[in-house]
Image (cartoon, rainbow, N blue to C red; front, side):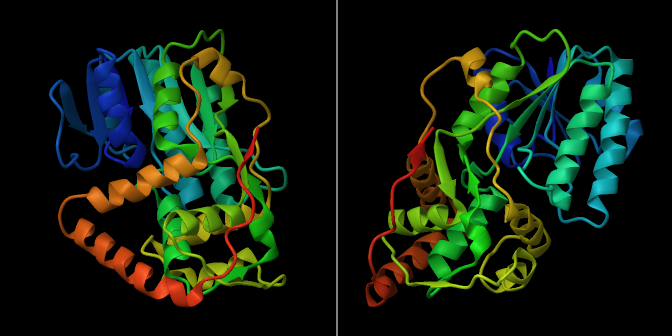
Length: 328
């Protein structure tokens, strides 16, 4: 039995079917039930902020995925610290054999509050009695991701690009399908003791290039204006006017862009094997297509917005986005 804590979230909803395809029995633990459950999946009410709910969620499981994230909530670093400590304790008491945790890449400079909290959770889980694999990713590219929603909205809705100096920070965005492949592989990777791995995507891009590439894929090109003195904190103040993502989440993610988010190595992919990783452009194309094909009101809104972009963009046409993603 495999337990996915936080399985109703963005990554968890993609991971659960992949585990089922591997023949695993899956239990999803979350505060609210998923919109639907695949055959072979059970759900249990579980809130990591309430330690008393953890033993039942972990009972009989051999491996647990820890996909909980409290970003945007009040005092979330403290809440995440307490939750990780409680989970590590309950995991040891339950006889769990392995924990797989999806965290964030360590920046070259001082981490933001958000990234610092992600790294601290990994340290807490790895310090516990249950062997733990921490997978560190930068932006995960997929429909439903807060990071993707911010990028998509900025590239689509701004009449011109404001380019602060911090948009030159580099990262290695990862396709959602590759993130899921890494998580699935992590349950079987040989593990002598707790450790961490970076799981970078194949392309190195600056934040500016990410915006430009998504705009180009959307067949939109917008003028750009350099604003070297605009800080990430000031930039976060106008995000609420542009993006549909939660403002508190948007602010924390932007504050994490002050340093490069580049991997120390790529050794996990050698252990995981499998096909080549998906390029940023292909991952972004898939995310845009998934949003267009989503059922219900979201689909109609996405198509209306796309139609407006098509009508307005020709008036704003400038030179194409500069450069191509740099392969590692």
